[in-house]
View 1 (spheres, rainbow, N blue to C red):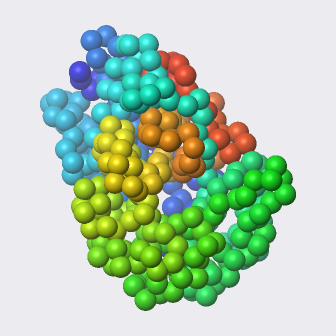
View 2 (cartoon, rainbow, N blue to C red):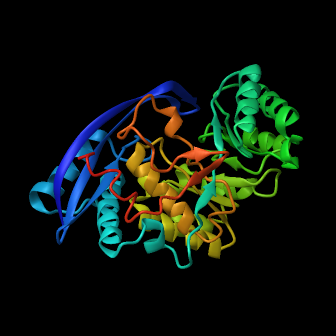
Length: 347
């Protein structure tokens, strides 16, 4: 296998996404193409500092892979994601199977449920976004918290729950998740989890990534704890050993590729943790790959994953999304590889 071509890209978000870690306005990255005995495959690197290496470090690693045949290492997970995903795409295409089928131990589902992401707007804005998402068919919502004062965040969460927490439509209850991106210290985090108990499925990354002991101490205080940034920093084995989470959020881009993300998800499930797959607001190639990873997980077709992020981009690498979201679910492409020939002209 060899990397034969690279293409850089920069995609603006339709609207900047405000998080406790700062606003995200543009996603820049690199698409790689590999050749596996005459069968090509594509992979994407979309670095996001704080989760992965920088864009220059990623570019340098991929250029070494192309020019010297040196595989990207763990220090450049986004670059590693691109190369290992491209290999997985080529391998599955050569075998005439989808990536999900090549990864799964059982027959993967045809679609997986997804959550809608609601940014850090005010109360009225959050409620309006939640109502629009429910009208569009979503039954799980993720609300960004942590950039505002804690009391305001508690008010926002309660307002959203009051607005959509028990909709009459189809008789389906709406599940709410919140994501703090490590914004709080231990005491405000305890207050937040106690306030959110019974209102949310979990609170994602309430404390900074390095504080595994603090997260372990928060478990049982109120709402369950999910870890995201901590997983990329410490790895699944350390998170499990520390007893730091009830759920883990798996970003294949940050973990170094689809196979590593799937292995982490299986280890989490075996330890009794809930694995949820999300993107780092990736472009279409990596986003489609994350859909395949979610479908390959045990129970992947039953819980909502954070994969409905394509609409956050003003434009994408391809005109038609091969894994579209409809009614709160995303279709798992059934063609060979990632999505048949959908990405053949990307690089």
